[in-house]
Image (cartoon, rainbow, N blue to C red):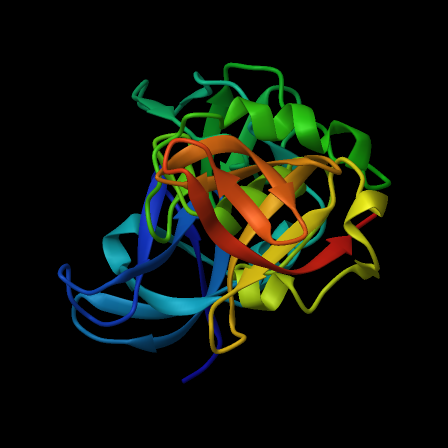
Length: 260
């Protein structure tokens, strides 16, 4: 198949493990995420997300087509929907979309963004791409998601998982990391000791088999914000995350990484 490309035309589109509405949601595309289409069936297209190379199946009706030239123009840093609840954009027919924090605004200029040949009026002040990582702003951005419900594969205020939280928060601050906790744990620079941890570091946690299964954002050397049931703040020590509500440790600390 010749290379084909698309872009997410809805606020949130689930990336599924298989070609079925009943299949596991592995991740999500947000509005303006551009993709390579690597396989097609009647209803489902297998895609590769340009941002993090994540692959999965989408309902093709949630994508708009892009030419190779348009796809190429979408690469690189772009303006984003900021960390606020209401981010309204208006299509040419006057209909409105409400896009999540971290959504791309492709080719943004003079109050408009473009999905291929479609133009949308942007009704808010976008988050401008930074020329350098803004690690000092990571904690403030993470706090925007506090109390968001946990959702496996989620990446929005209305449902988010642990690695979705770290990825979107970092994206909003000019830091590109991969999608899953295991993948993120292979990035960054190791922090040797917990007392040396700083705000914005990522802490990773493993299971009894030594496999990384959880990630959270350090607020300081003794507190972490992470998605577990909901996005919450808990104490952390060398053993891991302690949940006072349950009266026990819930996640075993494996490693801490620094980015930016």
